[in-house]
Image 1 (cartoon, rainbow, N blue to C red):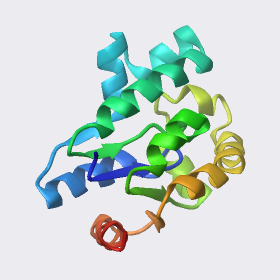
Image 2 (cartoon, rainbow, N blue to C red):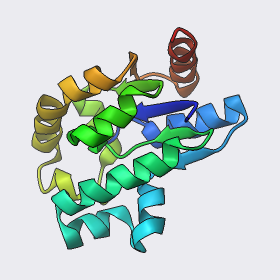
Image 3 (cartoon, helix red, strand yellow):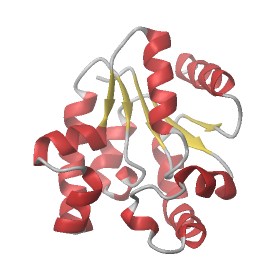
Length: 164
């Protein structure tokens, strides 16, 4: 069982916060996109474009399952909550939803390789929020605003982790 799992939209800071938490807790960090890439032999964005979202989500669940089987902090891909199987796994873990206002998320994702954000990141982020917010809420024990200094975010996540 993982020590903690962080979920959230693209640009929420999942990888950055997970690394800082791993450092604070003295444990490794597993990023499900990296685990998936190792499993399939291609970076997650390239794999998504090649096989399509449906197959990507099936393999993402396998990466999530492998990640939470270890005593680590897990950073997930933003869409991990889309599948019922992934939500069932996350519900059994100490999961925290990292979030920030849409304009902050758009600024953070910039020109990154994000296939699901297409040519209009502001509209895509808003649509993803509409679609996924209920699922993030369903699997998470707390929601932490990441539009603040990293140390404050880490402290809030640790407090949420200890309260569960």
